[in-house]
Image (cartoon, rainbow, N blue to C red; front, side):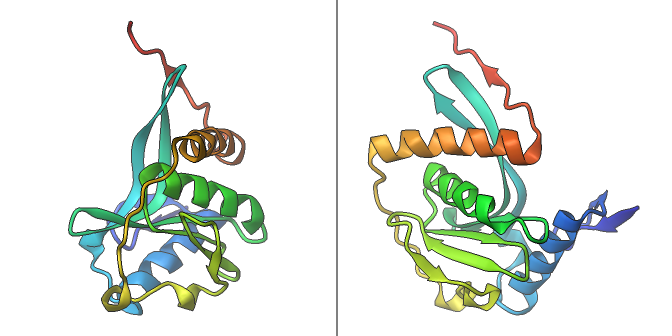
Length: 169
């Protein structure tokens, strides 16, 4: 069974996690004022580590005027806690000021740089006209740790064999 993606219009497998993502996409556009053009679905990116390059995916990336603003990782119902670490690691690697993990019923919104929880409800995601994007430098040791966490969590939670492409010397 398939459902149509709210932002892209693509047909996707109807899974509990995908239903969460569709609710979030619709909420961001209809309630929070984001343009579908500002929401990137299944944003794929490279994670550079000493062993090579790993491929990673953010469920949703909000990008405003070419600047990464919010990473949102959607979880199947009742599995939010590991997604909080995943969202924070992903946000640090992509240098987005806000990290969000949600299973729709429960949500955690975090400051990427401090890790502080800024909200515990989907409604706490800033509206488009309230969003302030302020990027900060992430210390190299914190960034390297975030890369390892991201790769590990994607491997475990998404059952994706994080293939690492060896860099040529």
